[in-house]
Amino acid sequence: MSEIDALQQRLTAAMDRIAAGMNGLRSASGGDADALRGALDDEKTANAQLQERVRKMSEHKDSAVSQAKAASEAAQARVAAMDIELQRLRKANDQLRQSNAALRSANEEGVGEPHLINKAMLAELESLRAARAADVAEASGIIGALAPLLERIEVQGEEDGNA
Image (cartoon, helix red, strand yellow):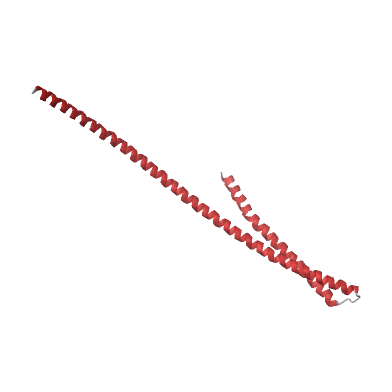
């Protein structure tokens, strides 16, 4: 019987050691789980912040793209207006050349025809008007291109002054 008692004591001691080990594992894993949950929460917070940053950057990019598109369309409109005025100038200059050629040939023949002189004067006036309109269109194009740059310089100056 003493062997059975000895074996029983050994089994009880082993069972106690196993129970103590299990309690230690439970308490250790509980602390690890809390630490892991905390780390997971931190990562979720960081992820949410990064997603918010990406959303804001995407909105900023979309805004910049729409502004660039609007500026491009405005520049194209100015170029189209300038092209129309240049076409008008070319046409007026061609009329002026034709009128002057007709006036020269009439003067060479010694026949000064008043309607040719009037026609030449009208062509010259139209040429001057077309040249002025082309200059105005060109100046408007330059002003349109410089205005956004000046606004940016003003904004940067205000930001530098406030900083």
